[in-house]
Every structure is written in structure tokens, then in C-alpha cells.
Length: 322
Image 1 (cartoon, rainbow, N blue to C red):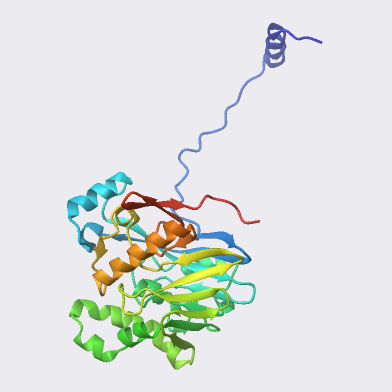
Image 2 (image 1 turned 60 degrees about the horizontal axis):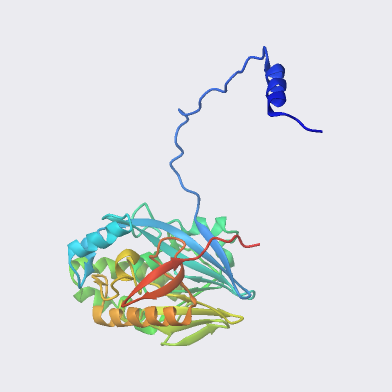
């Protein structure tokens, strides 16, 4: 049977003849929610489940913090990525479920960096885990936005976990003598580290390592000193797949991938930190493994591509985990 368009139009007109069309009331005046869901993003790495956890974002005046460059170059690089300064900067942690161990790498800031951070615990719970389930916490270094989340007020945030960090960072940041001789504006960093780590020391739940060390099967600490005296990165491997968690090897993707020699005032040894960054970029681009970093835009997971003398960041493609 064949229908002509004119016949269909006539039938529709006949069906709707005499009907009154009532429109729904406009809802444009509904109040804006102005809130974000707890942030987590999950990928599989071989047999391991990797969950990126957002602690929130903090606005940083990167044109004043970045070094070994000029402010006008920083602004130009930011503008290429539709950014300005202060720059909203992610703070990420990473949860590794190996099947036998639940390992958290870095804990966010809790209350040490103001009200825009301190959300990692909520992100962890939204991701389906409770802090009491965490077996091990590995710290890349003892700056406040990495260790602050170890404490929930005056209680251990991860009461059943062993906390581990490189001995060099423990020796530096937990030293009263070092804090006493530090400039006034640097003493807070020592106080934050001590307040976060010392309760675990007292409870017998803090253990150090020295340099490259396998901590649990499939998760290895690798010395990457420079940003702090004991800064470490973590290699996670399962079934031939690899993820390198960089901690603070870099801070501002829009600037430091294009120019890896740009450093930051937070570095204890900027030359050593730069050397570690150049090494990490080159290896990631050559080997093609996944990378995660604390201050890459959440979830901070992706790949590094070489582009001439510079590098480019390729975020992971969104794929729901089944």
C-alpha cells in the first residue's frame, strides 16, 4: 500500500482539529543547585581496579608560583588552554584495588588548604568504599595537600591502614630541628606534616622505605627526589599493563608539557625536580603507559605524547567500567 504525503498531512490535521494545545509551565526560575557530586573515576588496569578520587580544586596564582620562566609566557600558555590565573588546580588521590589489598596513594588536604579541598573521603565513599577498608596508604611526599587527609579531626581517617613514605621525606618534614630553622612562612608545611603523620607513628602504623621498593605485589615505590627530599612516584602493574602515579612531578599541564623546564616555587630542589620531570615525560612518551598525577585536571589519568621538543597530554577516553 502506498501513501501520499498529502494524505498523511490531511489525516494529522483531521485528528488534531479542535484540540487545544496546553503548554507546560516554564521552569526557568528553578533555583540553581550550585553543587558538584563527589568525584571519582574508575578504570581497569589488568586485574587491578584503579579509582581516581577528587579532593576538590584550589585556585593557584601560577603566574607567581612558576619559576624558570616569565609571567607573560605563563599567561600566554594558559590562554591557549582557555585558562587564566588564579588557575583552578585539581588535587587527586588514587585508590588501587589489587584484589588482595586496597591501597590509597595520597589523601588530599582535609582542612589544611581551605574550604575548596577536603573532599577525598566523600569521593571514596561515593566510589563504594569506606576508609576502614583501606589496607595501605602510600604518600608521594609530605606536603599538606597529600597528607592532610590522613586525619579526620583528631581521629585517624584510615584506622586500619599502614601509612608508608620515603625515609628522606620523613627525616626532613618530621624534624623539629628543621622546622625551627625554617623561615616563618615555611613552618606551616612542617606543622601540617607532623599533625598528619605523627598520630600514625604513635599508633605504630607508619613505616618508611628507602628508594625503589616493592610495597605490595604490583605496586612499587620509585625514588623521584627533587620536589621534596623524599618525593616518590608509584608504578602500578598488572597483566602487562602499567600506570605511573607521578605525585607532584608536575603541577600546571598547560605550561609544563609544552615547556618541561618550567619549575615551581614549591620545589625543594628545582633542578633535581626538573630532571625528574624530563625523565618521566620521555619514558612515558616512549613506553606508552598510562600516567596519573595529583594536579592534572581530574581524573588526571592519560598518556604523554612527544611533539618535537615539547610534550602533549592525552586524557583517557571515557569508558564505563562494567
